[in-house]
Image (cartoon, rainbow, N blue to C red; front, side, top):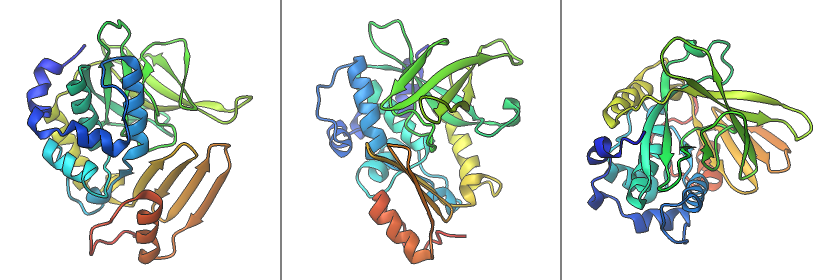
Length: 288
């Protein structure tokens, strides 16, 4: 299930990846081994170390997915990125650490009544750990509170806890020869709540060039949600911060939620800098 042989030349010229800088940026100081503990640890550190943001798409500019540009933006500057950037970088790092990685394309189905009504626009990763027959789903680029914090085993019939969040997979019937997997996140407390679908995917491998096309479409199409309003996310052990347009939502680890509306452009820039660690490009309009 790995596309490492086919995709590595496009994704990861080793000289362009400064693994030391990347790991220092996300705060990972443990041993670098291709095992499950490393996979989980790097994934969680990446989630907490690099914010999700769509500032380039908000300017109708497709961000580069080339490794030198990803390093410059996500590691060496006060910026973040969205799924294609985040997961391309993580895939490159994991391959450098000795994991097998397959790029997958998913349909985001949060709030959708029909899975087939949503296009395949989200990048996620299928990861193989050497010596482990169980593949894992990894994803540091899903900008929602239902996102994975750690990789989870790709199997049906079990619930997984990843750094305090709960997920599971279900398979649903659809047209096509491959099984359709749906990632669900548990919403609510342990005594109640519901399982909400996040995204759906098959195990058909995608290539770097496929996401070049999808990235351009999502970042430049005026009907894309990422070109219409600000969308920023940051995860810490204590809270999940989401800025959607003018609305800032702070969800604490104990479930307490605080919300407020941004006042103006100055307020938006201050929130991005202080709460998310993001320096917005000069001259851009943040609020519609």
